[in-house]
Image (cartoon, rainbow, N blue to C red; front, side, top):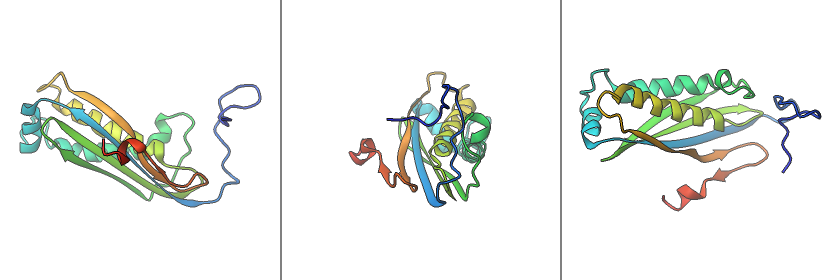
Length: 161
């Protein structure tokens, strides 16, 4: 596999995408934060002292997706047409998903991963007084579409894991 993030001298560079065609691009990333049942109840019941945990985490994730090029040095600046964060609350964890979309020359996987990561970190921050044992896990790209490489669906998710 040839990497194009380096010049002839081995220096890290931003990839030149000027010759690529604009295509619709979408990426979905997912991750989980495990916590005690007591903390889950507080999140569900809205009794966390810092406020609406999932509401704040949703906004944080969307903001993070939009700021990805400011955080990841060689990411391209993209005009996102969609950034959404959704949650599923289970007995021992909260699962977060971030969907990002654009029409452009490069994909939005990094934006989706950044969005879901910051959403989970925000949950951690808002709940850490209740549960210091929380654990963020399984952050990964579930699906991506668009561009030359086309459709990618993570086999981990297709197996239902």
